[in-house]
Length: 189
Picture 1: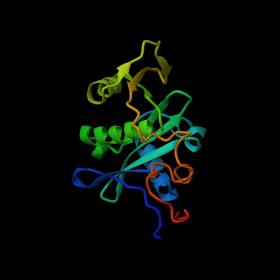
Picture 2 (picture 1 turned 135 degrees about the horizontal axis):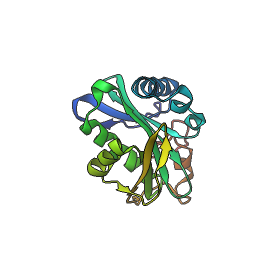
Picture 3 (picture 1 turned 120 degrees about the horizontal axis):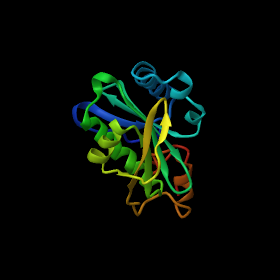
Picture 4 (picture 1 turned 30 degrees about the horizontal axis):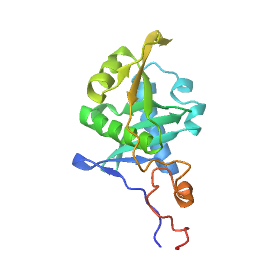
């Protein structure tokens, strides 16, 4: 049996989106984050990178073989939180963001979550609302580095094949996001 590979999301012009499952992909995410958060903003390193990077799902965006974007998802009881969305400056494009968001929303729903949230500065909150269909939550904004961050939510449709306690045991052993692909270690029944 061949090695399990997760299916990448194929897009226009060679754009592909992958769930991080290898160290090289993780390093690509961290490089993108360093460029976008430490160079493009005033975020200090300990804000751009934190302990949550080891308790989440990272997703990386490639254009051909070049890492151009990244995002992380943290998982809570009733919702998933989208964080650290970043595209390298010359690859910032609403179509790339839309494709990444569709991939992220689909992944969250497949895990059985019906709600995704994010926190964004007003500048980006409008983009999340208009382009991605998120709604502002009626909560006071949180202030970081002198800028307010508002909470946005998107209600998701959980598919019939969501990962649940009823899922096959084999499915629960499989790599994140590759739940439909038989592992080379599974027995054939």
